[in-house]
Image (cartoon, rainbow, N blue to C red):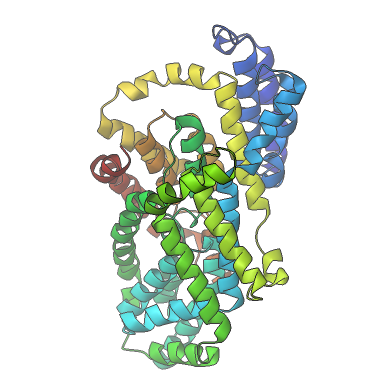
Length: 478
């Protein structure tokens, strides 16, 4: 597949660039829409097939956009326009968010929070499963879904081992349900905040660049978090249908949770400082719509009329919070080194692709071709977008999916938001998201099991997102 993708990317680009088509006939644009389409096709094929590391693919616009004259300006200006998206404020927001997540991991505060949530929900088998889902989703709101899954799998395996020892048999069904709960909880939880998943930052960046709209941190949460609250119980119902087949007794899950909490010891000073800084950052993000108008005149006065947008404010909060932890000695360089820096390149590449599609005139061409979709009723629009995104994210990474789709779908903010949420809703295949792949190492999840549970959840997510987009997202973001 990688070899096919490696060859197909440049071949498709060459065909789009050289073969006469409507892409060469957009008034006043010359070959530029075809050039933008060529780069987009090349990147999409390499992203979907992972022919090379996806962060490397994200660097193609730096070379190809200036070389092909996509922006229709001189080489120095073209280089600048190609490079500018790689330093978009939303990238620094995500960087600061990842650094805060690294501090939570360094002091094991995320682990303590997850265990406390599970203990509070209960230790009966069905409540253990619900607690695993809720705890995983809650942590995934604030740190990467991959890191969340890596943390929660050992906790889940310890719980399964304790229950199996109590029952004197292997719990095939409940073990699979608990492990899938880790994967699915991490996926769904990451939808809820701007920093929960790279896809959310892609959405915010595309909304800013393509639509000229800054979606605030609280505004995004208002649009996304209710979906998390609605969908987690549905996931629990589907997983408990499978898990209850083992006919479990009360078990001794409480022993495992208590032992894990005891191993963490009392709340350390490091945890207190990191928790306090993180709480302040979250409150500042959520209060940005109220604080930013107060700060904007001061910033404009101090920095020569600089206009403080929402993305600048949020990125500043993220970086100042991370910097504070570094200065206080609560975030080590070793923890920072474990941050997935390549994700920042991936975000920059997605923003650069959006800039090229817009600047090269491809967006005008695509808008004309998607007129039929825009002429459909709202229900058909949201249904088509939700289902197509879920299906595409099943075979490609969710970040690659939104990087492509958000640049070609109609320029409706609620519609782009629904596509973003749907990209994190693949539950059927390991390739869909990293948490799906991680739980395969547990020994309890097999591909037929994931497909049997995940395919109905994929369709349920698409159906719910259709209704959710119509009823709620249009109200919040419309």
